Image (cartoon, rainbow, N blue to C red; front, side, top):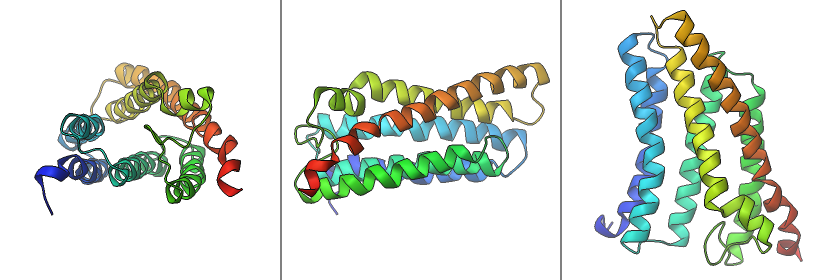
Length: 202
C-alpha cells in the first residue's frame, strides 16, 4: 500500500485502535489508567479532524476514504456508548439509540453508494437544503461532535479514582446533560437520510 497517498485513511483506521486502548484502560481501576484513557480519548476524537484535514490538503479525498471515515466514527462512537452503559455510567437506551441509528442510516447510505452517491461532499445523497444542513453543515457536525466528545471526556473525568466528590458530581451532571444533547443530535441528523431515501429505491 502507498502509505504517502493513503495517510488520511491510515489515520481513520488508527483512531479506532487508539479508542480501543482508551476503552480498555477504563477497566483498570487506577488513577493513572483513567488519566491515560482520558488523554487517548481526546486524541482518538482529534484524529477524526486530522484525517479530513490531510485528505483535503493533500488531495486524498475519495469515496473509499469517506466510507472509512464514517466506519471509524461508527465503531468509535458505538464502542464508547456501549462501554459507558456496561460500566453503569449511562442507561442502556444510549447505545441502543446509537446502534439503531447507525444501522438505519448506513444501510441507506450503502444503497446510495452503489448508485454513485456519498454521504457528504459534491455527490451527497442529500438533495434538499434542509437535509444538507442537518447532515453535512459544519454547524451541525461540529455541534454534534463537541457535545459528544465533551460528554465522553467528562464522563471519564468524573469517574477518575480518588477525584473529589464535589468535582466528580459537577462533572457527571454536565456530562449527562451533554450526553442527552449528543444522542438527540444523533437522532436528528438521521432524519434527512431516512426522509430522502425514497428516491434510492425507485
